[in-house]
Length: 345
Image (cartoon, rainbow, N blue to C red; front, side, top):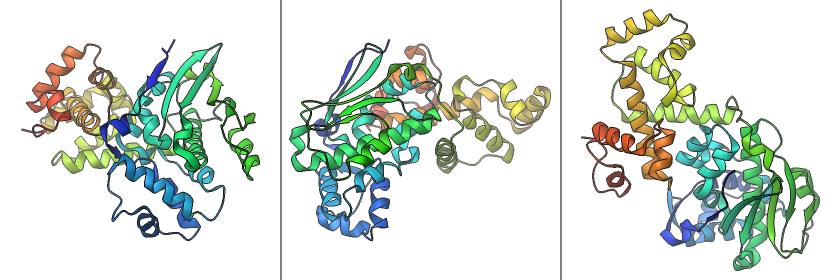
């Protein structure tokens, strides 16, 4: 069973946050004739950078709420979400095998999806429960933020599962808005307003269902990482690129074997190894390149623990991962996360 955990508001405590998920909101406002420049001016910002101060992200939500011309803007914006809007966290989620693994990965991700609140998760009586703490701290901004992050997560998790996310009920500590019927249409569960708590309950059985890794958003994100890998990793032959792309397409590339890759490339294992030898590379060497690239991305752009990153890179023993990382880069994982040295020799 996934343990109860409390997702402290790491965004606020660390000061700097990512602009994850915001393209969906900006796109929805653009449909209303409101440009990104207008949003930035209203928020008092000169540009939308990858890294935002916590108060800057809050200001962007306030600006979006003030400029929006439809009461349902935040709910509709959440339905535009794509996994690629969440950078390294999106890739981490896309490569999870089950919802349970994703909820664990999402300890920090939930905050990056626009909650602006402290969130805790628990399982009880066959239900998963997300609880928002001190929602009144957002004041008049609460309905907009609540609609946006719940709609966003509902979209992403439904996409991952390949079916409707099984919400059981939702409660909100504010009065029912004029567009309350849209809540029920999107979330397809009982909705209660003027509640004492802000909760989202869902069927916990979904936690152990496998993800639908064939969805177009996941394919899009892997394509993005494929392009980013070759952008930063030097030149490769056409065959090497094909092998690496095939590995990434397997999602769980750290554990993929040469036989699986050769079959996906429609060649015999013997021919596959012969081609690798002709290129002067080894299959393990190519896998290690991918492991190194993904590990550095997680270290720099997520708050996943080194243990979690180790697991996602195919290591059961974190000590072995640390040794391998030192061998690949000449640095320790902590030095990369702390930005003390370059990630390459």
